[in-house]
Image (cartoon, rainbow, N blue to C red):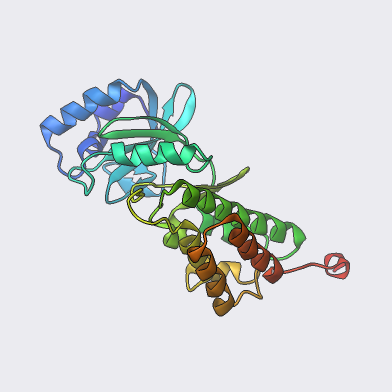
Length: 264
C-alpha cells in the first residue's frame, strides 16, 4: 500500500508523527514540518504493523518508515514522543560524520524531529547469512568479503573517534545490499567515549551470539582465546598494523576449498 501525504494525514497512521503520545499540538507541528520535505508518498512496508501501517522499525528513539522522495526510496525516522534524546539532530550529526568515511546510510536532511536517509535495499545481516549458500567457494567468498568489509567500516569509525555504541548487537545494526554491508542506526553513537567499534563488532560477529553460530561453518578455526588476544592488542594500539594482524588471523581461520573440494 502506498499513501500520499494527504492520505497519510487523514488515516490512523497520522499518530505515528507523535507516537505514542498522540498530542494534538505535536501532531500538527510535525505534520507542518513533514510537508516541507516534499515527500512523494509514504509506503506501508516493513515487518512491524503499527497504527494501520507496516513500518520498518520502532525503537526507543523513533518510528522508521519507508517513503518516496524525489523519485527515490528513502527512510524517514520520526522522533518518538517522548524519547531519550531531546532531538534527532545529534544522531544526524553523527551520521553525517560517519558518511565522511563512507560508513552508514547517506544522510539527506534532518530537523529536531525528522531524519531523512537513503534506503538500503537489502536484508538484515542475520537474514542474509541464513539465505547464503551453505557450502561451496562462492558462498564462502561472499561471506568472508562481507565480514572484512564490516570490520573495515568499524575501523574507519575508530579512526574518526566516533563510537557507534551498538555493534555488539550487530544483528540489528547491519544491512547487506548487493555492493556490501551497511552499518545503520547511529542513535547511540558518541564522540565523548573511547571508540570501541572494531572490538565490539568482532565480538558480536564471533563470540556467543546468533551471528557467531551462523559464521562458525565459514570460520571453523576461530578460537575465543586467540581472538581475544588480537582484540586486546588492537585495543591497546588501534593502528593499521594491529588491524592487519587481526584480519590476517581471521583469514587463517576461514574455511578453504581445494580443487578437489570444488569438484565434489
